[in-house]
Amino acid sequence: MTTFLILGGARSGKSSRAQSLAEAAAPRRVFVATAEALDEEMESRISRHQEDRGEGWRTIEAPLDLVSVIGDSSHSDEFVLIDCLTLWLSNLFHHDRDVETEVAALCEALRASPAQIALVSNEIGLGLVPETPLGRAFRDAQGRLNQKVAAVCDHVEFVAAGLPLKLKG
Image (cartoon, rainbow, N blue to C red; front, top):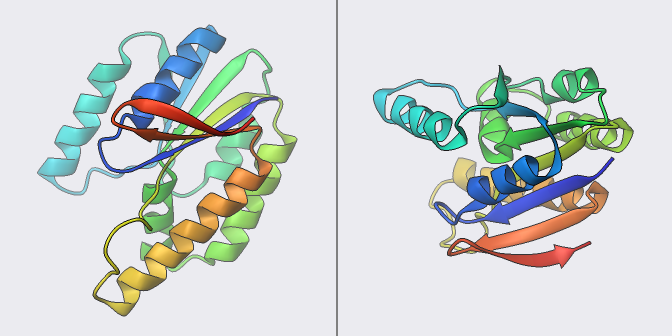
């Protein structure tokens, strides 16, 4: 098992970096999409990501249950790309899930999986302090999520302007 966490800001090149790792590593590639197309703009983003991936990917829609998807990926020759943890966390908030429990289960699933896995996540704590209590709670939860996942991943990179910076591994 090899796990990667790819962090960065919006439009930094995180997804492209994760896709290039997958394409170089394994013939069997699985894209786990956490986004939900709730409006036209998000539908457009999802379509653009699908086009960027091209052929050779199996897609699984998993806005909430990443643990089951990781558990079902039991092939060591499979590369699973989860894009992205920030949307997953947003979905957990929206559905009033216990974030700490879900994050702990995710980390345990990552430790147990024989598959190669890359997780994409936004680093949102570098900007302005959110104006609302909910925004601040989300920012803090995102920071804690990134720290916990980084602790269990073999490799962690920060991507800025399309350039990866190795943080771990």
